[in-house]
Length: 183
Image (cartoon, rainbow, N blue to C red; front, side):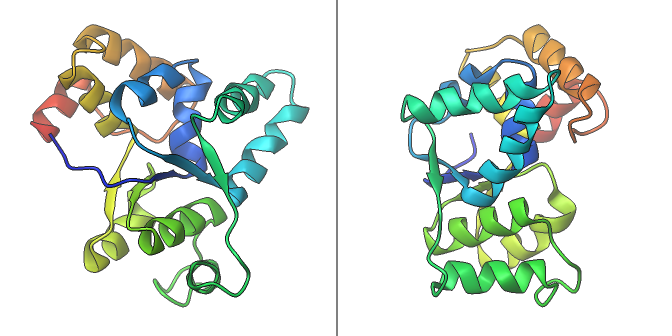
């Protein structure tokens, strides 16, 4: 199974994928170390509180924060994390402007030698590969939970189907294709 370095730092889409389908438990079946969401991600998620049909997405995550299963991290304005973050959101590193969630997750993961959890590989993969930052995604997290025996292949397929209904960024195909990809 893939090596994960802690902390695992989530962007908005990845962590909300599990919250949208009320399956935060899957994260805890896979990760036994520190889980982080950057303050920028928390801010994005908190906007969901004002929408009656999606407020639960924020509150599911907030509940895990209150239980100390997930930490919200703010970096100092004069830190290396902040400098890297600004360079990402200004497009100075990859040549295109990166979203605040992905930018903050990569910045924290790099300086804390952790893993980025993001479904937006088009923004993160090249930089992470070049700099040696570990990264993962929702599909791979589901796969790791399956390998650990926490969820069955059928359950993982059902979870992916529900996530896709909520417009989460997942790979095409079935969970069997995910198994082939990561085996």
